[in-house]
Amino acid sequence: MEHIIDATNQKLGRLASQIALLLQGKYHVTYEPRLPGTDSVVVKNASKIALSGKKMDQKIYYRHTGYMGHLRERRYRQLFEEAPEQVLRKAIFNMLPKNTLRAKRLNRLVIEK
Image (cartoon, rainbow, N blue to C red; front, side, top):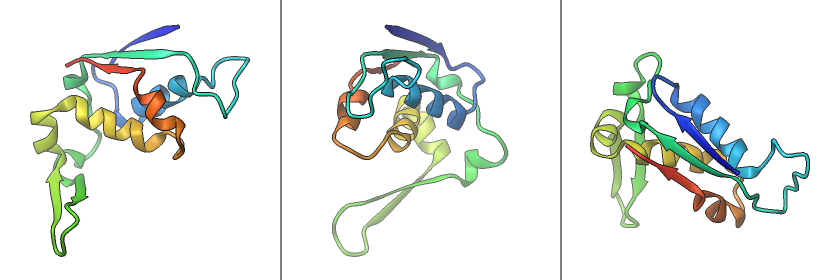
């Protein structure tokens, strides 16, 4: 089953948790945690996602290059201006269970600007 979600004026965290549950298939009667699920999700208008409070300037994404002292950081505003779909994908990625099924579930996610 394909779910189409409009992200206009929806909060990032609430939207990501809803999508994570859809990708896992938890809304089906035949839900099994060991199976990847069959539902796919299409998100439209990812560039119109809303954040509450001052998170636009205070939220920071960290990544490490692997070299000593090379911790890189980017503000939410920077990343959102360049690639709003990446912000939503990162949020959903972190809300899915940390196991081998996570990559298979993310492959069924399509995010459109």
